[in-house]
Image (tube, rainbow, N blue to C red; front, side, top):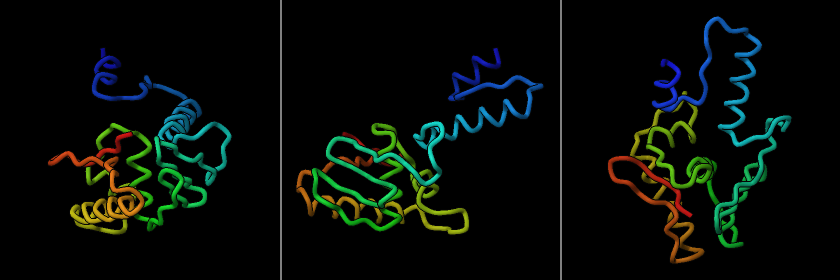
Length: 146
């Protein structure tokens, strides 16, 4: 019954005690690989481009295009957009976006994320006036829609 409750509240996996350290390490690697969208055996810095409709993000080259047109992004803007585009339709809170864009040593106000989102939208609207792929859910966060 503990397993069922765990899965119902969002767990990806369940490990019964006692378990071997090797099994636990392999399960952690598998979860991290899924979270990064990676494939077994891929190099640490070798990530596949993210293609979502008209958006293409290439993390290896720090390149972003919208409908074939390049969009110049700062590192922080790129990381925020990458976090949103990895799971389209899923809502990301400001805290989750801060975690994706900043390391633990830096404190930023959650309204800083709002400013980054505003600049992202402005940059994409310079390419096309119809850009509306980043949706605001007031009081909740943001999500990328295709």
